[in-house]
Length: 154
Image 1 (cartoon, rainbow, N blue to C red):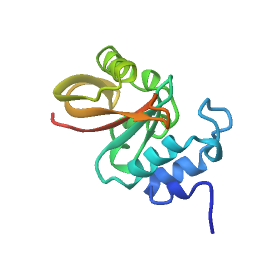
Image 2: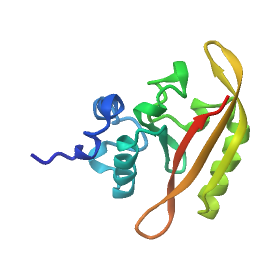
Image 3: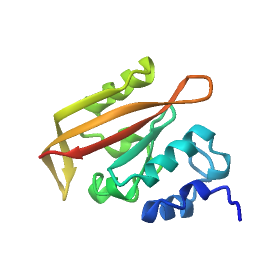
Image 4: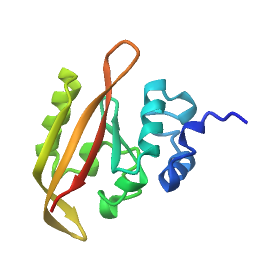
């Protein structure tokens, strides 16, 4: 039987959290009205065993898979659907301009052993990361989101 949420059924725990989340008050709207590029990107994200997130729309609203769920630490699962800048204020001075560049230029970006001082376990910790930002485009070629894959190298 077809469901508007079929694209989330391979998503493990995060697929369930996305399906069960109350999206009615969120600017991205309800899943049945999500645009095809978001659905397609989420299907890839949910099916990946590598830590993968999607930052969607002009506010860079956050979606992520099971492998990425440990990255926001105690902010998980609250982080789902929140603005990236609100989820990671302590590193936004580094990653915010990187996101902006990808959204504005449409060119992907990769960082290796990037230092990010992240808040975890009640304190700021020095961490290092390899990650990439890949533009997600709509059917007209406009950048509408970013696919983020990465892992900690600390």
